Image (cartoon, rainbow, N blue to C red; front, side):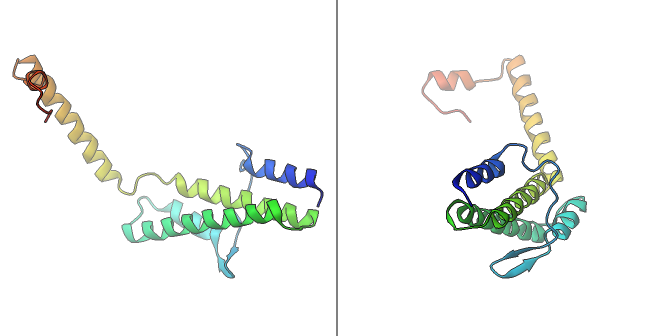
Amino acid sequence: MHDYERKQLLERIEREGATVGTEIPETIDIDGEPLSLHAFVFETRQQESIPPAHRERVEDVKTTLRRERGARKERLESADLSRETGEGLAESIVGIDRALNALNDLGSADLEQERAAAETADQKRWVRFLKQALGQDDTDDRRAQGGVEP
């Protein structure tokens, strides 16, 4: 592969919209072990909420995919490759990126816990407002005396 071809492929995998229209690979070999990537991502995204045990598996897969992406990019940057092999490698990197994007978009592990935390924060702000409105807020007094805020 020529240097300019290698440069084009490297630019392609780093492009912002590189994953648009790209399919997640059905399977991907990582350290000689096949991973049914498409099925894993599809099944994970179909769940309404991800149980903690499965969340660990998702995080492990994401870490493995990031490491594999780095290894493949390094190979694309420095290995003696044919044009076809380089294109296949770039395509697999973009497919990994697509899978990572899908897994990263899963959101919070526990939406109920997140909702409860937001509600608690709202209540604290409301109590603070009421104390200020009723003249019972002594936060400014403690700051002026060099104290710490509660």
